[in-house]
Image 1: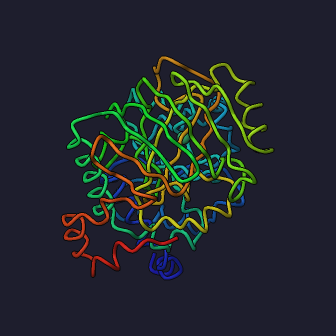
Image 2: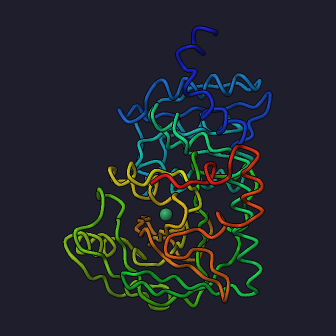
Length: 360
Ligand SMILES: [Fe+2]
């Protein structure tokens, strides 16, 4: 065991932060470590999580399978589903573009009908698992979530407005039933490292939204994608090649243009520059504090009124997000990071300017 720990020492702080802080794995629990055998998932990362699970007295078992595409609602293979049903906790390690297991209907049905909880690990490389993002204390991140939720509730309204310098101007309502409600660990479903507060917006949802990034495309899109949203449906998509690609895909799926997600990022250390080098914007870049992302198609939870066989995200880096007079994000700055209580809590870990300094 000591030899293993020697070779993994740089990864253990991050793995423990997930297992103990985010997922709250307890002694005696059965933890399924599920990998997709893709080259993106580093075996040392998986090994570090196995050690972290066993350190708390839980039992880790490895499930390795070819994966289905969760965003396109492909069903799980029967033996995979059977193995996951045996677990109390699912730690999923799927390539970044396929990391959001919540979009798999089999998994979301289990999450919402059984005690199973699923943490989708997106620090798949040793570099990311050793990063400030992965090592940022879970307690502090959840403190920030609670602060943002409290700020939002203090507004006395559920009507949000999202604007940005590229021309976004969208209004809708926050129902406080998902990311703005579940602000304590362990969440039933979450990314590790985390940083997003997402909701299925409630009507009326209307306005214009401009995407600078689109899931499936690396970096900034060649031309901003301008969406017109009327009564929670995307009725127009303007822009360049990526906009045409997006419109075409939306049209292929029933309810593919339903506006199903509004989210803000809350993690000061999510490395945007790393995220921009991937085609999975929704994983790293849009976890960063003060960013936004939105999606069309089916919302992740089961039982929502409008269903679809796909879910697709896009977003941007410098929104302003308000509820009444309360400003949650101002030009890409999450205001909670400047809150005195957040700074005081952060001072447990060092100087708050340093602990809360944003990593781009
Ligand atoms: Fe999404």
